[in-house]
Amino acid sequence: MKEFNVKELLDEEFQIFVGRIGSGKTEIAINVALKMNEQGIKNTLFDMDVVKPYVRIRDIKGTLIGKYHLSIVSPPEVTRMLDLPIFPKFIIGKLMEKNVQKILDVGGDAYGAGSIAQFRQYIPDGTYNLFFVVNTFRPETSTKDEILKAMAVVQNASKMKITGLVFNSNLRWETTEDDVKKGFEIVKSVSEYTKLPIAFGCVDEKNTSVAESLNIPVLPLKLFVNPLPPLGAR
Image 1 (cartoon, helix red, strand yellow):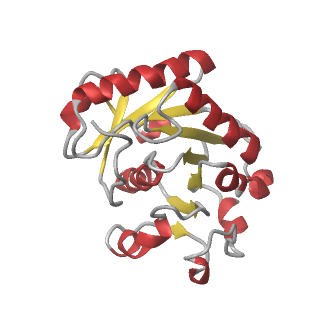
Image 2 (cartoon, rainbow, N blue to C red):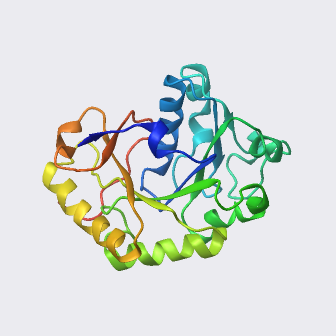
């Protein structure tokens, strides 16, 4: 397991995290913002997940701002319970802000990923990392073929190219080293097929030993979101 270095991995102006429900993309986006804050890197976290089958950044915004002092752009409060691509008027100004890292949490289906297509002109090629987050223990990303299909949906809807994979196979506190190894082999096969790098992996900061076998940078996650039930029985 290699140490995660946010300065080396996230070298573009925009860090965009997409993934299917339960992938952990929201947790990862939050933790990347926290890491940047720790290292004095100015950043803004954008809540652009318009689908609500689960928790979004706006649902825990108070804690993230009050306790962790994150800078967050999210849809208006009146839209909190709606699944609509409605964003504040000042979002374009924030996306164009200079000398600030922009971290985007985006939905991983056609509707969710499509929500950022309207801002494509403000996110030019060569300025972004688009990371597809994979948890092989969640529906629709449990096999190589399912992952490839989900990635194609994201690229078509967002009008952007995925630049890397983020490995996040887990069963929360029940995760074992064997679970990690099995999940990694699936994501590795996707990486080899697509020629996309596995940029980094993630693990619960309270259970880092399960990721010791990984030969990639690993980001220990401070968890904010309550878990979904696992995919199938153990």
